[in-house]
Image (cartoon, rainbow, N blue to C red; front, side, top):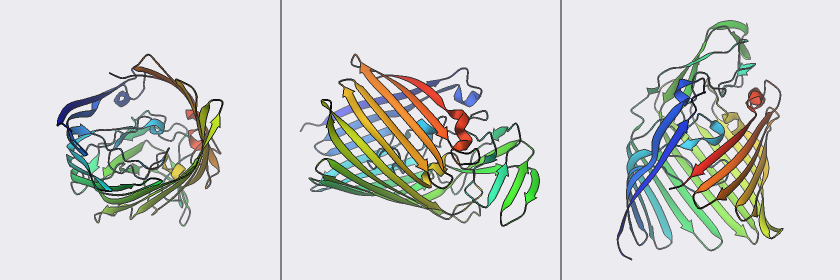
Length: 371
């Protein structure tokens, strides 16, 4: 195979001039801007890129490297980082190695974003502390802090085996946390003392993003049985450092089962998924992460026509009995254009982890153009 050099450019443009948060009104950056070299199974990439390692749908424990843009946490786009990205295969073993001299940071929602809790209480990662919100909650996101030069010299490695009916991969990462600690600073009135602490906030909520160094291990296993596909993936995150604000550990596991059915001259894929996670308690603000604590989901993917696909899923969060429902209808036309309409619904009591976002139900129209 001849040597092939190539240039890869994938821009990301966001324009929302009516957004009340100035941070979210306009954003332009390169997700991919790299020089590629390919020869046989060797792939070398120099420049800005993202890391995409296969795991499970919806929530992927193998997604451990690239930070994201959280202006819309339901559809968080990955951010590119400049580095060296190498992939190769030796016999039955494939590997990916990544070196990022200076890792990008996550883009958090702006001060006026609806994704900061606006009713009842602030969800935190400490089940024994409740921060009751004032009638009109206002936020100020402070400048980020980075501990222990966490975003410098980030490294990652994945080893992968691909067989006839099953795949297995393990991965490791040491570098900056994908999402920061969201440390809230408030003043308020103490209503209830420990062990169940309740505080009525009576001021603006300041949020301090704190990035820190982590050591993460992850694995993914896929097995095919006739028309069934079984997937299992997990991760363990160990923060590095002695700062008292650091969580001590977190774990995530995802189990999913897919069933393909011939239906109306197409293939209907039924999906079932169970999510379990554990983490040490902390007073860090939680931004939609409670969905992953203990939940179960059902869904389907149906390409019912040549250029049309319908995706639907419902997740039930079992700790606070709340739910999230997603429907997505997408279609493509011409060779480069794609259109999608999505409906997202949150349900649950106002003090539940997802019910607090019930005002964020929405319909979204998205157009994509590839060039």
